[in-house]
Length: 286
Image (cartoon, rainbow, N blue to C red; front, side):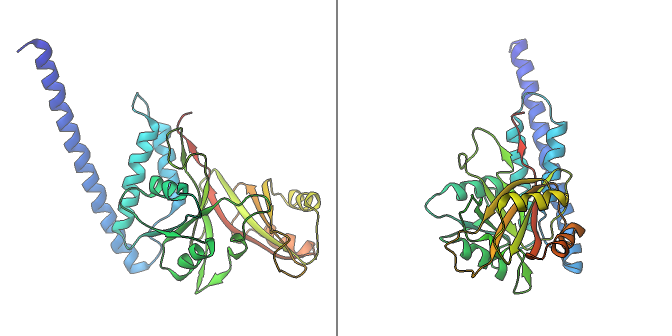
């Protein structure tokens, strides 16, 4: 046997040792998750936190180096995270499909190969599944200007639950990701948590018409940096109300004092509420 063959055998042997070490660490992590499950069963609480998951992936991307693709690292951890979440209890994702399978592909990329996905023909059906607790979370289309009717229900209490936005998907972007250029929002009965790099959504209802420039001016004066503004289509039968979904930079807590101040200072506003936040997605190619 040549010296090169000996070296190759040694390297293959080293890979075997590394594989076993990796497997040992995965099993060790599973043991820790089992302990977490037992604690949560005693004290309650959700079995998954999208904000915490985002922090884990960001930390890994920051420390990663070498030739191994960052996107693959992210996908490996997405599989692991979803599997560990499922260990803690029933975990099911309701997905709006419409006429496009892209949302199912986004769901599969984010939640891994083993998470149960259910397809829904309407956005209201997705929201109902999450509100009733028959789904742990739901995937819905990103609201577009003057389109979509599902978002006015965000933040309203239903069956003791309040469905809010908790993630923007795909969280990890890249040329080979499923779903093409489609984006989506993840909703769940979760209180949002700050991750250090976030976007947030507000809903504002007005008792009379208001121009977008004036609304933007009021929000900017209150300290909000708008990134998008969507209004409910005028064809909706909502009397004289105007309803806006506003995306802003940064984290907005559901009890943010600026929300109450906006309501107090502007009689035209009948509702001002935060309806969720999301960790800003990662680009593994940069």
